[in-house]
Image (cartoon, rainbow, N blue to C red; front, top):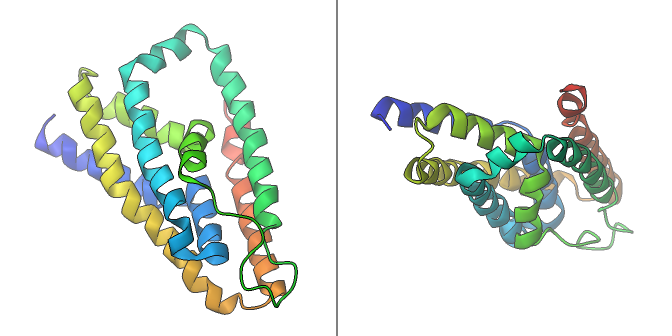
Length: 200
C-alpha cells in the first residue's frame, strides 16, 4: 500500500468515524446518561468490534454474502428492527424522578457494543468501502492495516461524541430536559435508518 493510499485511508476512516451515525448517537446519549467512565466498555466495544469486523469481512465473509445475497437482505431488516429497539431504550433511559442521580438502565457492555457493529448499517458501509477501495490485492496484511487504521481514528472520534454527551449533562439537570434529550437522540437514531430503508 502506497504512502498516498494510506493517507487517503486515514482521511476516509476519520471522516466516516467522526460524522453522525448510530454509534455516535448512542455514545452521545450514553455520555449524557451515564458519563464517560461508565461508557468506556461501550467505547471500546465499538472501536475494537468494528476493527474485528473489518478483519473478518476481509478474510472472506464478503464472498459468502456474494454467494447468498438473501443473507444481506435478512441482515438489513434485522438491523432496522434492532436499531428501532435501541431507539426505544434510549428514549426511555431518563430517570423516573428528578431526584435520581443516575439514569435508569445500564450502558452497553463491551460485548453488546462489539456485537452491535454487525447490525450497524454505517459500520458495514465503512468496512466494505475501505476493503474494496484501499486494498489492492485483499491480502491479510492490507486488511489488517485497514482495521488498525480504523481503530486508531475511530476510538478518538467516538470518545469525542461520548464526551460531548457528558458535557451536555450540566444542561440536562432535570427530568424534563434529560427526557427531551433522550427522545431527540432516539429520533436521530431512527433517522439514520432512512438511507438503509430507501436503499437497494
